[in-house]
Length: 114
Length: 114
Image (cartoon, rainbow over all chains, first blue to last red; front, side, top):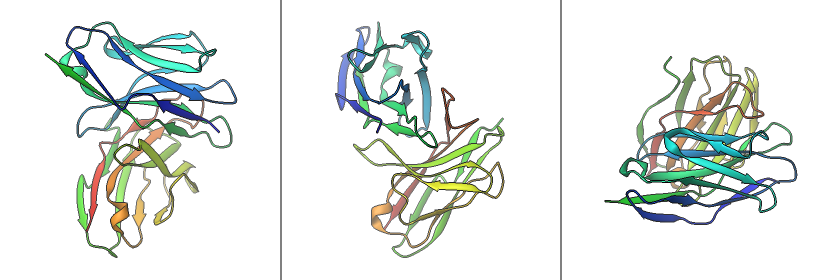
């Protein structure tokens, strides 16, 4: 069965420093992977997705993620954090069997300090 | 396009009461789903539908009912509310279930069961 593990429940950075949010996945097949962002008291917004094309995926707001099959990882990065990046981030894998469903990680809360 | 809309935004119920959470989308999406979000657990799939008249159970279906009589609407019914159903509920839709299709999320309904 497909699953994702987000390795950090909280990440704290200073404004202007790099962001790294870590995600490992488990999948028997070539997976579809997503990162979603949730700002406080809001719904979820898609940041980026990987669907077996280029392994380096660029998303909105300067975020990108690299699919590494050998490491079963899909880490989210951004070169320079902005205060508005403070939110919760979810790594998500789509199942490849039956009716394909999204399986969410437990989330990483990103805190950005001035 | 209103996207995915959910009503109500907030609801307080007493144990044993029933209610329906409404979800509608105006994007002609075939696939719709309901999730609940609890602290530290990410989003978990309750029920989903791949088209009008077709529904199936997700990860945590107990205590919830759904039906899909039209493409646009996918209501979630709580038959007899319990404190364990206190959560934030998100409805989502996508064009189809598979591949890299983006799921669009509604703003959520915050439910408290006393």
